[in-house]
Length: 235
Image (cartoon, rainbow, N blue to C red; front, side):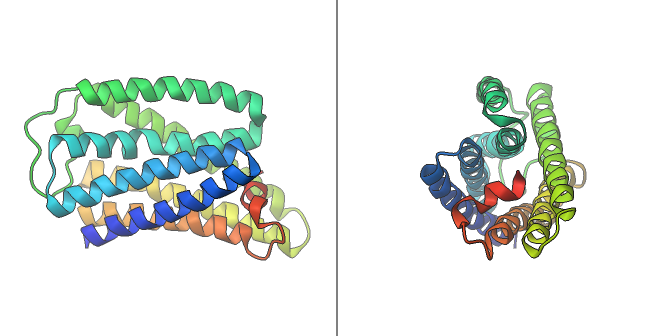
């Protein structure tokens, strides 16, 4: 079941990333570019998870999974929200900060000591095998990133909910789905770190990215301008 959920999350994230990259290339929109990058990162993290739970973990697979999934994916997804809500000038500044943070995270994960060899198909728990720095980076990145995404989505949902018309209601629902999916993804990390239940963790990843994807599909549904409906939903 864990393997199936991990492969499912990889497939959904890859399809989502491809669709978002196509819109970003067509529209030349930085927020969609940030989303596409984050989704590809998430897809790679899910692929590392699928490999680990199927063929067995090793130190390299776990380093890749933790770096891409626990540290980098959520803040890069949040960068798209920053671009939408605060504009390109602020977005570019935050992006350069995030590039520096990502470099620090890559260095930390490549050089940190892992407590013993990682083997078997059970998902390793970061607090049991990693030193403090990578775990702090994961907590800060995922926590701050999730707050940005959730607050941005809820603010947009409230704005659209006050507007008349079916289209505004649809976009409000889309933003609620995006916030809900982000909560599910964040909760998965908490489940894995505290409870250590592999099935629940894998389910949270697959369900979270699917709900976020559903939010974008709802935003695009029924719109005569499908190429920028996702941007309008989160604006």
